[in-house]
Amino acid sequence: VLTSAAKRELKARAHALKPVVLVGQRGLSAAVLASVDEALTAHELIKVRLPAGERAERVLQAGQVASTLNAEIVANIGRVLILFRPRPA
Image (cartoon, rainbow, N blue to C red; front, top):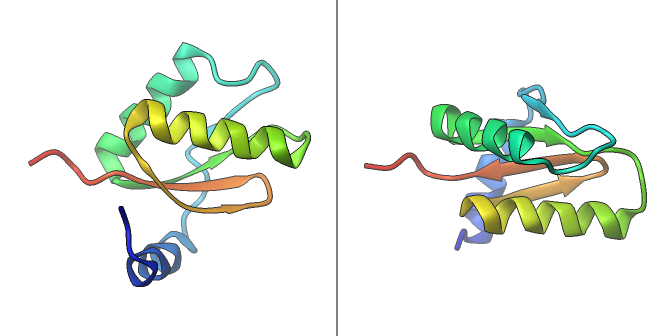
């Protein structure tokens, strides 16, 4: 679990990043989750753009991605989700 100070630092680092995974209208398919997993393994800190829709639905999708891939949600700003997962040692 990330502390608030760690989240602030990661959010600052993520500011310059572009979304590396775009979730389409079909939602969180196995291919999308695999792509997010691959990006997290390569970069540790990534941005994911979620599809337009209800805020509650986006929050649900963000939680699903984080729990499935064992990642931490750094921030969820509008349609952009910032995820962090430390590289395996």
